[in-house]
Length: 296
Image (cartoon, rainbow, N blue to C red; front, side, top):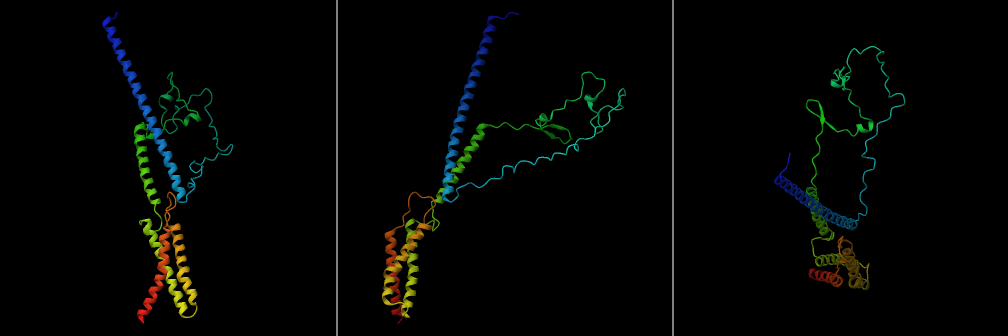
């Protein structure tokens, strides 16, 4: 059979087109793999940064170590006990005597015949080979059909790496969103978290000054019954109780007014606190004197 030049040229063009298509497909597949590797590297960097940020958040709230996981042997199934020597082997059944033919063909042991593997007199047909113990564990899993026959289980669907990377990226975005919310909450102090730092400081110093004002009234009552002299009363009103109120507010702001995560030291407004405490306590004493005189 002779091939003409036109047929040879058409065949050469077809092979050339197939080769170009194969090269284009290989280049496309290589570019897709490069994009997948780049996406995996970027996602790995994001997850590493998230891990470091979570460690910082954990240290800020007092968690230095991750919670202990389950023991290493918790998920493993217990091994079956080995039978004692000589107890697990079944006694061998006496075989047929030499020269005598078996009365029934070999079967499966449950009343059914052995099929083609047990058909006598057929050349080339033997028993089904038995797998060794090591290879038997590698056999395909079987699923039981409604009819009761064992059929090979359906293979799992192929995983698309692009879809899996997209799902991982969405989960990373969700983790970033929750991490930002946690950082916002961590930047709020436990005491009056929705208030501004200035309003919080004013409220704390005013509260400490009011508590010192109550102590001023107690000292005034004690001075009225002769337990405290006038010099001691004046010293506590002008210096002692205002200083106690100021340092009390300072300590309260440092303990409960400090966020878990903050850059630097939060302001405590020391001049404002000093002014509030050293004005509020004497003002409470003056208000008490005016109230007493008004009642008289």
